Length: 139
Image 1 (cartoon, rainbow, N blue to C red):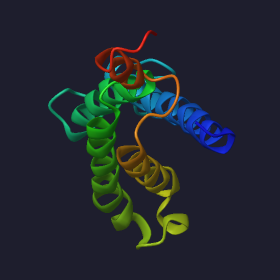
Image 2 (cartoon, one colour):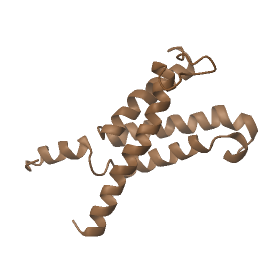
Image 3 (tube, helix red, strand yellow):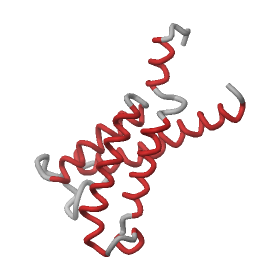
Image 4 (spheres, rainbow, N blue to C red):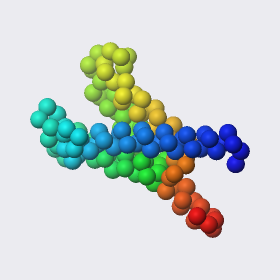
């Protein structure tokens, strides 16, 4: 692997870990009530509500992407969840533009996870470790 390619592969892994951690933390708020919890009272979202379902996807999907396990399909699912959140929750708040409807973070998450779905997990991923083992390479 060339130096530039190694650098891009490493940067991709670092981005995956950082973004997945931030995303996972949103799920931990909704699903577990951590980091101040969900809503004005700091509790958890009801599991059968749309926020509860989002919390489950964010918590477990974020954890899987953070670990780099099943990165591509999980990141694709997450990207879709964030696109739905943008159009369902933010668009009605102030029109299409994210700076008017407070949907910047949701739009960014959707686009970054779409990129991860295409690019894979990069360095430091369990997907990479699994691929090396399947190829018979020593770890």
